[in-house]
Amino acid sequence: MQTEQILDITRQAMRLAVLLAAPLLIFGLVVGVLMNVLQAVTQITETTLAVVPKMAAMLLALIIFSPWMLDLLVDFTTQLYESIPTMVR
Image (cartoon, rainbow, N blue to C red; front, top):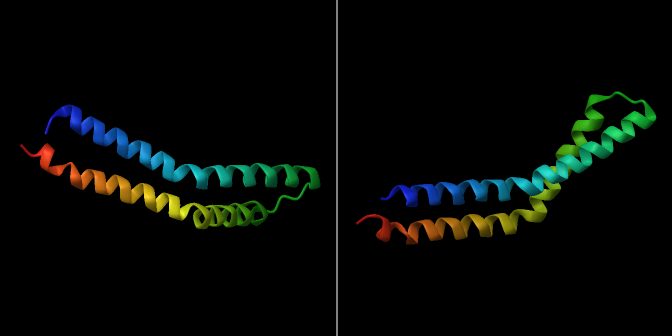
């Protein structure tokens, strides 16, 4: 196995990790900012008011994007397994 192949697989895996995490993090970020603005406007300093909606939004994002995430993971894994014969020479 060549160094370039290892770096390429690592690069693809890191890109996949970012793509898989992005929808959850974006939903959590947007809801977190909205809740912080709401808390600042109403001067409510309840911690659970910020955490629970973020968790719910991230769960909703996971439900919405899970088919897409699963497709990405299956494609990457299939590509990785199919490339094994070319790597072991």
